[in-house]
Image 1 (tube, rainbow, N blue to C red):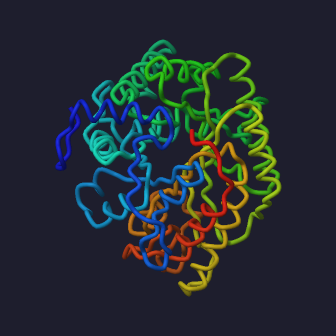
Image 2 (tube, one colour):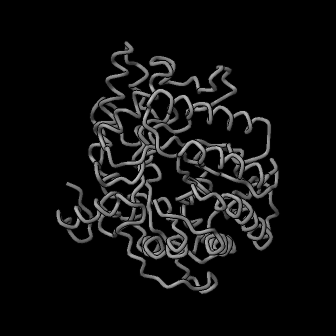
Length: 386
């Protein structure tokens, strides 16, 4: 049973929320009136909902249990939460097959349930966070069984609670040299490209109500490498549709930089999103943030550059009606993978100055980035919620 230190779970409430999740935004309590970001009370969730969108952010069990002021800000601002790391296979792994620790993931799921928040699942398979023991499995059959059982356990545990699952995270890597553009990492090496069909079919069977997402990075900017990745992703989605592999949405990670290099082309992004929508898929902006690794140290200048990057990206992305979800990869600089230097050293500052990539600063005060996101939501075309 999932529990937190808040009020106890209630089967009746669970049924109500599960029914509400059938339509994106269902079950969300929009409590805060829209105000200026400068007043630190703008409810981004409210502004998004008024345009048929859902705005959300990451959260972790550690934050829920230890940072109540931050949690209050999340409840004020977000209509959706996603576990930043707590549902990743390697993070749950306790060194033995089938012995995952669901405690932190349960805390995040219960937090969403008890506060009427939409819950995204991230992720079922990711080459980068696969348990060490998986690599020692002797046969294809052993690996296939492990993949199936993991998806059944994780997706089955939260069946009916999850709005959408990133079933396979980052399956594309054109630099690996395959004609199909697939990443030659752990699952493909033994199971072949069929692992994608396997994962999505098992996910659909395990939780039929969850939207199934292909989540990918580096498809936003105007470079030859990213154009190649966009082409490979579109080809993968078309192959999945032709073969009957169940896929409902595309996740665009959008880890951006305010440096202006590589360049950003609004028209190119709009064309790509239109191509995705033309396949009948919805689109989710799943991991949006803006790093300032090459920006001046002055916080006012950095904040201006970061906010401008948010504005230009969201103004283009939200023109596409198939975009239904916007998730920033964190809400406050207090809890950011970039500030923690968790990975991706190329995005770290080299001068010792703390990065400022998110809408609120480390003291939970709104920044120009918050105003930029709010303005983009206000001016976004209305769309049918989904």
